[in-house]
Image 1 (cartoon, rainbow, N blue to C red):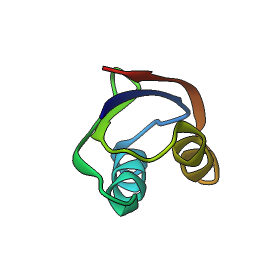
Image 2 (cartoon, rainbow, N blue to C red; image 1 turned 180 degrees about the horizontal axis):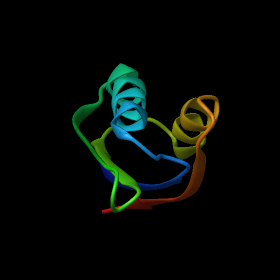
Image 3 (cartoon, rainbow, N blue to C red; image 1 turned 180 degrees about the vertical axis):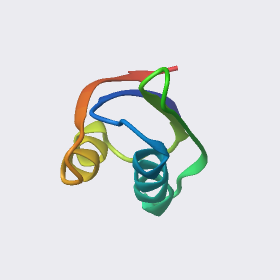
Image 4 (cartoon, one colour; image 1 turned 90 degrees about the vertical axis):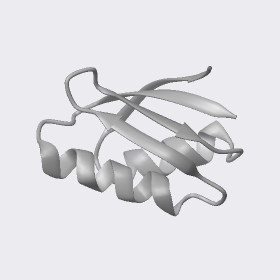
Length: 69
């Protein structure tokens, strides 16, 4: 399932790299794209939203919303 994750707190390309790395580490994830200007990430995964939220928030960012697209 493709998900759009709205993320607050990313301010630089290192933030993008960290979020990208965490999303790539999710089980069965693919096609990860993180957009700094739009403050969102796209990922195809079947991982539950609460697990995604926990992984990102553990890095110090805020997950505003996760949408299935």
